[in-house]
Amino acid sequence: MSKRIVILGAGESGVGSAILAQKNGDDVFVSDFGKIKDKYKQKLNDYKIAWEEEKHTENLILNADEIIKSPGIPEKVAIVKSAIEKGIPVISEIEYAGRYTDAFKICITGSNGKTTTTTLLYHILKNAGLNVGIAGNVGKSWALQIAEENYDYYVIELSSFQLDGMIDFKADIAILMNITPDHLDRYNGMQGYTDSKFRVIQNQTDQDIFIYCADDEVTKQELTKYNIKAQQLPFSLNQKLNNGAYLDNETLIIKYKSNELIMSIQELALKGQHNTYNSMAAGIAAKVLKLRKEDIRESLSNFQGVEHRLEFVLKVHGIEFINDSKATNVNSTWYALESMPNDVIWIVGGIDKGNDYTILEELVRKKVKSIICLGLDNTKIHKAFGEIVETIVDVKSAEEAVKTAYYLAKKDDNVLLSPACASFDLFDNYEDRGKQFKQAVREL
Image 1 (cartoon, rainbow, N blue to C red):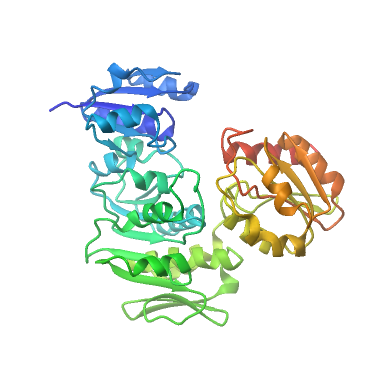
Image 2 (cartoon, rainbow, N blue to C red):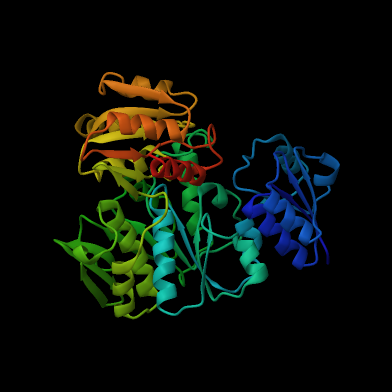
């Protein structure tokens, strides 16, 4: 029987959901409180799907049987509160799309490393010849892929916002990279955010797999609160494990059901401590799927990395420019600063998400010689580092940031864009911020 499905938000996720709902024969309406991008308007028009922009018309929304909400819209928004009060189910694209596929689902979440791990695991599965799609926070909308493609496996990156709208959805393999403070402006403190991340194991049975970091303090603490039915496969840099992945000196060992894969960490394409964790998590999942050791080893050693994540841009007069625009929280930026071999001109700032900069103090003292604040309100950054770093400059564009950094830098310095903040004050998103940064570097 046809249902009335209303989609809130007409971005990648919302438009994909609308197309899948229409293909299912439902009556579909899309509403966006902002302006809809032309490419998405075109797609909605191609499919003859009704839409509105720059408003939410209540009588067209609150007659829904079900509402699919884009992950960027908080539950405190008036129209969402009204829907919940009326008893209309409000779900995520992931929940909705999951009903219409029998594909094997590998779901990856965490505060840091999830995009790299998702992309790396997709690379491994694709190179091994599996019929696999990549979705969630990466690439095309998952709902759109289910509507238009026919994959046997999906590697899905899930943000906490996407997990919030998950009810009956189940991951066949759930991967939790870590939990560090993030999005505290949207959640009621750290516990709300942590609970959201742990939804990735919701509905798992003893036939499913849960892969997690045994070195992450918050994860370890939370594990004691749950009756986890899934088989647990941890990964660690600090302890030997019977199952999962660990380091023995410079050797990476991945174990599953008494089957071992061994390789030197020097062979891994992705360097640095945080990337070893990413390689471990992806490697365990690949072993669970019974891929050939040669295929896993080869893919772990030839992976090219992710755009906007510690991405080398150019060397100009001996100054290296690095784009880490994807670092939207303090912990991601800690990893970036920690991996810098030389003195750093650090470009930071944007919309603060409840950041506590104290964990960066030691690294900033040791490595940062100048700070460039790229945001509308840089008060917290000045307060945190004003007495540590002598030169702190405020700028309002990527071009101004790059020119200022180039002026302040000397040969062999690293200019690092690693904002530790969301991008929406000056840019469309972190990709836009990264692309503008790279373009400005190329124009030097």
